[in-house]
Image 1 (spheres, rainbow, N blue to C red):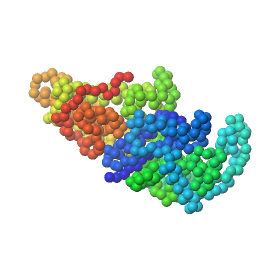
Image 2: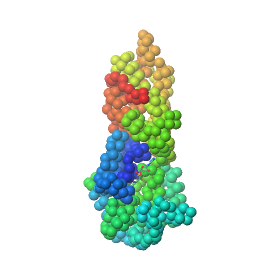
Image 3: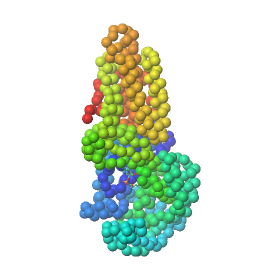
Image 4: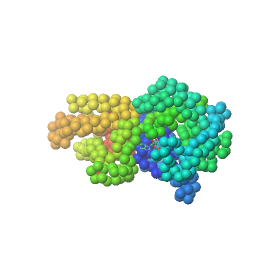
Length: 507
Ligand code: MSP
């Protein structure tokens, strides 16, 4: 079986989970589930980025140890993953020994190879903000109040020879069109690489930042941000048993567009290449959700935390909404109105009603037994042709991470099934005594049930619970592989469908 290793960004442990975090984990989960259905052996890792000044300061404010604060935040993020039904195989935390050991050994190796050097750095430093400032931070030629006293200091730090690899990276990106996805972001990275790269400062003196991984070759310093965080992708698979080592190099890193350039598209491949390690196949940069909890409803001006919708409407409705609404790579606006209209129209009216009335009709007219579709007339043929087209295009879209278009395709088929019923009028056929009408009724119900089964198989990566519920009503086990499950067939014939179920109750 072919491996597929994919990751999300690891979230900062300095705040609570929000819509942006939730979206990225759902997106990656949908990819992971679709890959499993496509027959890959998937390893899916997400986690928490726990070091740094903000975490240290946050803990200080609360009067607790940084590790205790991270444990609290990790529990919160993991509860979010569970609530959203994210199927990650591992959760890596950068304070775990398995991660720290790998960071140290990569640093030590690079240091021994001469890729890391120490030098003096001179600049303006604000003690109050605990950061270096640049001339551009001045307002009208003076340092603003918020920085307090600003002094020019000289500090010694360690640097990684990034610039040495600039040409190699430009070549790699130019030759590997699937390295940066969506492809329209490649130009942006190459543009960035037109300017000469500076070497990367990878350390902070311990007296300023103690909450970090010490440099193995100089205990007076800790590793600064990216050299710690990015390595998680690698440490998650190399530090434990041998099996997981086969997952390197990663197939896909899913991240937000804000951390593409330079961290993921520039620092990370160069860090790996300089360490003689293989670099990942692709990086997929998604866009941003705007609003994030501010005014969400245009009509009522209501303010809601988007994540609270998961409790109210269920994880699958939320997963459907974010996947249907956002074009991967572009930004989207989160609005309660849009959420509710998708919930009521696509989920309630189109899919939910189809299921409940179909189960009801099969119970009432066939005592729950799925009949044989004996006829195949123009109506049936049209619906089957529609499915053939939808199936091909939905798979193409899903495999290219265009989930919004894939879902649109599936729901256009859902509407086609409803339209087919409106043409065939099974409720009228059921009133007739004529044998040909009985045959038409049986054909109609069998055709609709098969259509519903295919829809349930197709939506399963996005709505895994709804998939299981629909399949359970049809007396089927949840699908493990897509393979021939997406073929139109007669595997439902003779099965007993169950009582009707309201999937998406009116809100
Ligand atoms: N810790 C770093 C990532 C290190 S990866 C080696 C970080 N953390 S974060 O908590 O700020 O963001 C985590 C992920 O959530 C990032 O990919 C980021 O782009 C994403 N999002 C944060 N806010 C977002 C939105 N409003 N919308 C969509 N995604 C956003 O960056």
